[in-house]
Amino acid sequence: MVPKVIDICEDINNLLPADSPYKNLNSILIYDTSGLKPRVKENNPKTLASEINKQKAYSKIINDKNFNPYAAAYKNMPKYSQANPNIRLDFVNGHFGYFYKFGLLTNGWGIPLSIKFFEEDFYKSVEKEFSTPEEQKYFYDNASLKPVIVPFLNNLKKYSNFKFKTF
Image (cartoon, rainbow, N blue to C red; front, side):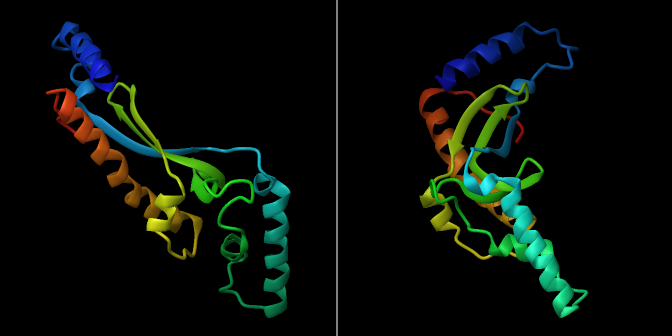
């Protein structure tokens, strides 16, 4: 189906005037990660708030100015939901929570070309301890590119002659 979508986009691009600001945006390949936030116990704001409050109380007891109660709360939270190991603790779309995380490839017009949800096998392959949610997001986002783009490009090569010009 993806080669057909790409062909339709190429046909539309060919109909655009040469001076159109939308001309050739279909030849740009864009990658991003996002996630769906399901209703699980761990996504209840009270769960995280309770852990942060515990860490703030601990911070007052030890009186260490370098102690970060938010980072400590993050480290103490379960790494995945009890309901499903594919619902992982992560920093997605600007906030901290439990998500079904996925990688998304679109063209420059924002038309989705590939969506790959990250499952337990992906997380096992990049198992690592992180200090902050931002560090985890950076690491997972970088590690996630290859398992999304390689199958997409291999499939594209098999069924189409189209080549993206910009990534």
